[in-house]
Image 1 (cartoon, one colour):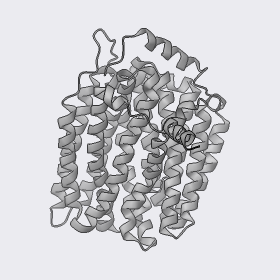
Image 2: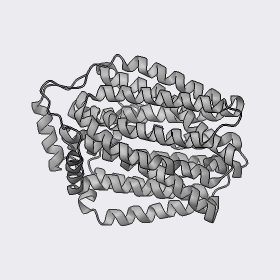
Image 3: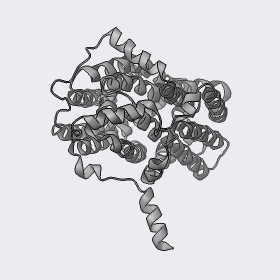
Image 4: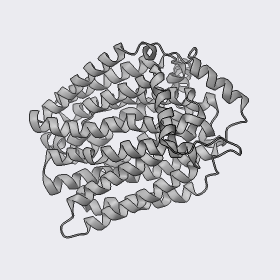
Length: 433
C-alpha cells in the first residue's frame, strides 16, 4: 500500500530535471527568483507607504489606475520588440530599468516628507518596464526548451514566481513593520544586482537566418488579428481578465488586515494565495495528464471567485487565509493551462506579439481590479467589495464561457494549432539550452 502511495506521489510531483539539463532555463529561473523576491518587498512597501501618507482607500486603488495605461501601451510594444530584437538583451534591460526605479523609491523615502506623486510615477514606470520586457520572458520559453517539455518549464516558471511571492511579501511585511520602507527598497536594489550578475551568463537566444518582424502598427495588427481569429486564445485572455478584474482584492489588504485586528498579518494576506499556487505547482504532475485545458481554466476561475467571496464573509484570520490559499491554488491551475495553450500552439514568429497580449490579459485584470476594489470599497465598504467581487467574478466567467464553445472544447491531443506546432518543432534543430 505504501509503495503504491509513494508511486502516486512521485507521479504527481513537479519535475525539476530541466534545471539540471537546461542552462539558460536555470539562469532565468534563479535570476528571476532573486529579483522577484526583492520586487515583492517593494510590492508591499509601495501601497503601504501610500496608505500611510494618505489613509485613503481610493488613493491605494488609484495605484492601479497609474499602472494601467503604461502597461497597455508598453505591453503591446514590448511584444513587438520581442519579435524584432534579441530577447536576452531585452530581459537584461528590464532588470536594469527596474533597479533604477527602486533607487528612486529609496531616495524619496529618505525625504523628510516623501512625495506621493513620486510613488505613483514609479508605479507607472514599473508597469511600463514590465510591459516592455515581460513578453520576452514569455516568448523565450518555447525557444529554449523542447515542445514536449513546455508544460514542465511552465510549472518551473510558476514555482519561481510562487516562492518569491510567498517569501517576498511575508518578509516585506516584517521588514516594513520593524525597519521601515527604506530598508525594503534597499533589499530590492540588492536583489536586482544579484539577478543581473546571473543574467550576464545567458547565451544569446537568436538563431542565424531567423526572420525578424520590425516593430510597426501593421505588425501589431497582424498579432491581434491572429489572436482574435482563435477562440481558444481569446478564451484564455477573457476568462482571466474577468476573474482578476472582479475578484482581485489586493488593494484592500492593508485595510483588511486592520479590520481583522491583525496588522501583523498584512504580509500573510499577500502571501496566502501564492501558498495555494505553490501547493498546486509542487503536485503539478497531474496536469500533464489533463488535455481539456479550456474546461480546466473555466472551472479554476469559478473556484477562484467562490473562494474570494467566502473569504469576505469570514472574520477569522486563519479561515480568511485558508480561503485565500484555495483561491491561489485555483488561480494557478488556470495559469498552468493558459501557459501551456500559448506555448504549444503559437508560432515563434508571432510569439512575442502574442506574449504582449498575454501580459495584458494577466496584468490588466489585477491592476484594474485594484481600482475596482478601491472604488467599490469606498461605496459598499470593505466586505461588500470583497464578497461582491467574488460573486461578480462567478457570473462573468460563467457568461463568458457560454459564448466560447471552441475554448470549452479545446483538447491538446486534437487541436490543429497544437498538432501543427508539434510538427514544426520536430523538424527544427534541438532547442537552445
